[in-house]
Image (cartoon, rainbow, N blue to C red):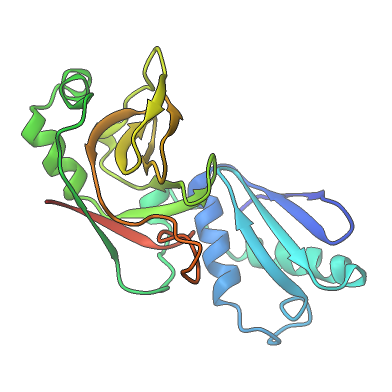
Length: 218
């Protein structure tokens, strides 16, 4: 796997890769590394994935050169996955199952854009195992990847000024669930009552990077 290492402040390095599949594969490899097994793994304190980069933070800035070398070794030993689904899942816990009522305002539009019937859209959404690629936009908003490619649809031409909390949507290659009411331009296909963000829970987010997610029709 080809990577580019970029400086990021005093105590971190930004690893730039080709896409979300590579991010997931590299993040899985770093999570699987036993703390203390190598000089560089002892120094890593945090790994934060995004769409095409991975932020790796260290406890001691003096260890950054060693960590950079270790990252290059790990990346060299990894094959770039052909797609997101090919990235080997990291065993965090069992799948997170999200019950969904499929009555979203854009369900008919998604059916039109994909050429599927509305019931086929639901089956495609529930028939895939998704992965949390990264968190962004709002606390607890997980960008889900690896779903059925037939569900890749563009964002709405005109975003809504308010999307209800729990709305389940699609945008490009991603799936997602709005953890709270906010503006948004995703195509809404359903809704869930699952508590996505709870400050009294550890961790507060129900969906964390690397977790696998399945949807079922409520």
